[in-house]
Each structure stands twice: as structure tokens, then as C-alpha cells.
Amino acid sequence: MMEFNFLGLLRGFSSINTGGVRITGLDASIVGEFDLFGCPTVFTAGYLFIDPKFLDFDLSPQEPGVPPTPGQRNAIGSSSTENVLKYRSRHNYKFDIETQIKKFSIGFAGNYFSFQEAIDRTFEFIVPGIKSYREMNNHGVTLLDIRVAYRPIDNLKLSFLVNNLGNQEYVSRPGLMEAPRNFGLRVDWGW
Image (cartoon, helix red, strand yellow):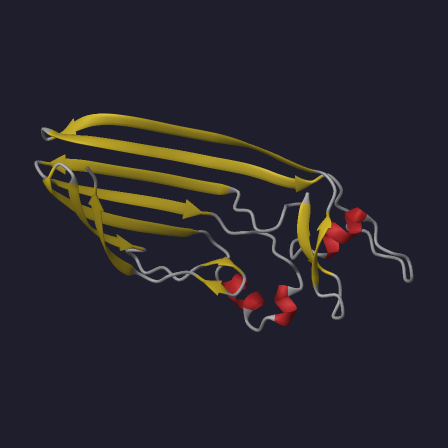
């Protein structure tokens, strides 16, 4: 498993082999079609759970002048004292439903990501506000999207999309704020 780790001010971040990892989990989904008041409707829903761990994670103190063991390096580099791989959300729920009414369709999608328990510890010290932001936002995030489409002819589809309907403030990586509510127009043409 290769991960970026902070190796000091002179060396910066470098990709190093963290040793073995084990990611166990469960992925379940359901897909279906049905009529909603006589209108064809399709849906999909899913849940993903992962338990991502280093095989070598050692919280014992590093002895002065002795290089850290791989397990100590994995623990030192993580913002969490729990053995969990960095930048992973353990829980993810998704759903999407779309119904068609003659030449129109309307769809609604949702996505939930649980809190990323571990990031690179260095970010909490070198990027102002990361630590306090993570402490105040230590829950997951739910994103909702909606779309409306019109198909005037078979090979043309015009869509209006609203992403992040609730205008959630969230980050996918430390210091990387994701897009606020946004609107889009889409044209699909085929022959």
C-alpha cells in the first residue's frame, strides 16, 4: 500500500510503502422498476461499509535516535489513534430515483458519506483551521441532487440539474472545499 506521508520540512511529502492493509466490508444494492401512478419509475439504492486497517499499526513511543518502525510511522502519520486508513469514509449510502411522465422525466439522488476519521496528522498543524474545522464538522455529509429532463424527439434530451441542493459545506480532502449548490444545463444528442 503506497501513501503520501510527511517526511520533514526538507523532504516534504513523499509516497512510501506503508506495508500491508486489510479492507473488509459489505456492499449491498438494490435496483428496480415500478409504476408510480402509471408512470414508469426506476430506482437504485445502495450501502457500502468498509473497515480499512493497517496490518502494522503501533502506538508505542518512538525511541530517540531510532528510526520508527513501519507500524509506528503509520500511527505517527495519522490524525487518529485508532487503526484506520486515512481518507476513508466507513459508511456510504446512495440512492437514485427517476420517473418518466410522457416526454418529461424527473430524478432525485442522495449520497451520504460518513466522517473521515483519519487524515495526515501534518495537515492539522501546517494548514490553518483544518483541526478546528474537523472538530466542528465531525459528522458525515448528505448531498441531494435533482434533475428534470425533456425529450422533444427521440435523439434529443434537454436537462436541468441542481447539484448539492441543500448547499452543504463539506470537504473531500483537508483544505479542499467542494462545490456549493450549482445549476447546470445539459444537452444530449444522438443519432
